[in-house]
Length: 486
Image (cartoon, rainbow, N blue to C red; front, top):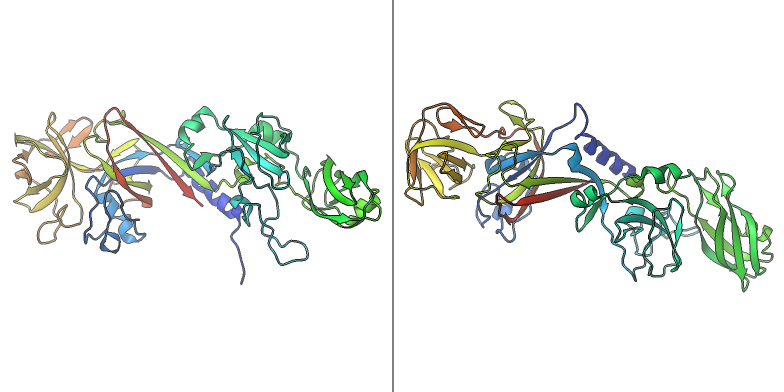
């Protein structure tokens, strides 16, 4: 049973996802960073096909039940994604001289008249949104290509923000769509993607069902030379007219003189051209290009294929909301997108969340080293150091469900507890958890212990990305852009 999911469904899904960030009863999304320990070939339970790769070439995460739990084990922190951090996006296509761009057509993928051959773009695309029919220029203006001078190279960069169709001296016709604002350029412009938004002035000037481009499909033969005017565009719209130039007995040019309104289909037959004065013409056929609903520029997100959502999150040093949440003492290799996590049993809402566990120590000897194993002999608890705050005597650590990072020699994962000595494996450091309940740097410690501020295995992990290690610093900002395609 032949069937398709249309691009409108993809747009619908991207809109629903985007609305989840702004609705009053919507979802709460967090960007998580984690994995301070190196990727290395192993037989770990979260290693895809028993091989997790290396720091320079980590493997693609698996999509299974483990992916909903294991990322919490070595998560370092999470930051809430706000509405202003989200935008619709499309693939970035820079204008470059010498490039032959595709044109906007309404019928890519349909059979050409009288054949079983699909109509494709100059680049070979059989769908509009796979075609290279729009560009971003050096001025960060975005234009839609309506005509490419019969598949010739573009040599004149389009400029200006007029709501009328722009014709350049290289024979191209462009429609200005919108300009990327300074904020969009800073937050939603990457090497491969860019924000897409509708310009209200362009939208207001759009005419639903107007016809602005008619292409010559077959030039015919034997026609009376001259320019023949007032030829009607027939269809379900009204008032559309073109002039047709015949030279050497064939149709050489078509110019829309009146765009009309209300067309969802249109035709100009050989007989119409003959009636307009090109007597004896045979075999001519013209393609009437139907504009998108509302007209060119009415809804740039839908017209340009905005079924991508880009999220931009900046991690600024230790973050200002809570300087203990985002460590700068360790690197990270994993990025996650978490929907509706919990914190302390309730829906998380804080701007930042510390994902590591922490212990306030006393009687310190030596210095704990990041990434070293820590042990508590009396409980058999095992962990790995993320950060040692020697000023406040706080040891931040993770416990995973894997050998050498969170479970003892018998394969059991046990929590650190009580006033039992904690010892670093690769150094002489040791210390004992305090017995007091206190608040240090906005972190609450009960009997010397502080749990992660994000509840393990809560919410849904929608996205996981393994990366080469990213080193953090107090004066550094990591700008992380996630692009989700629907």
